[in-house]
Length: 147
Image 1: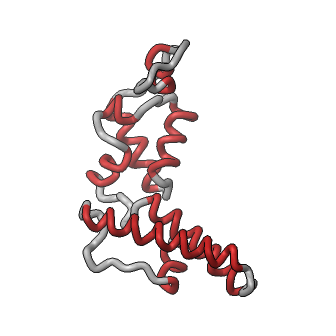
Image 2 (image 1 turned 90 degrees about the horizontal axis):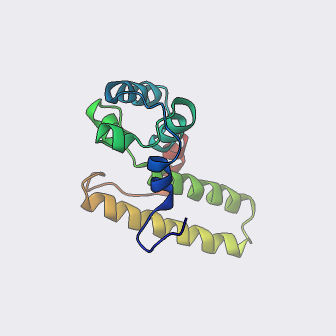
Image 3 (image 1 turned 45 degrees about the horizontal axis):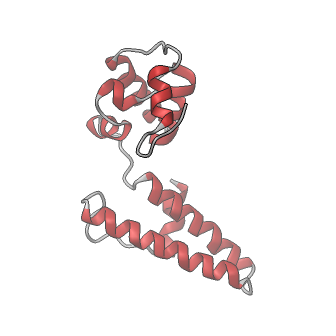
């Protein structure tokens, strides 16, 4: 099976491959809410639904993304998942630098990661996902990454 430009083989495989035993729209939404209340992130919910419940694509079944379903039920994360992951990486690098102050490659990596955090924050402020006065600082980052 040859892939043409603009085609996504994975989505095509999911729609033309084996038959999935797909739960109904209401059941999928219930599962999303149950997993989210259990503390799972949106990406982990998608992986769990695919691997354990046979749901190939939540949006194709419900018409809404996992995050949209979480927002409807008031259990969406306060900070977007990708931003939280980048902040956690910055916290790890900062703690490494506190133990190894002469590690110049890590200093550069931390500067690059913090730049990425600020770019993501600017994007999410523009999309009104984060409040306009939200700022990244290293002290509060350690608290954010633990939550």
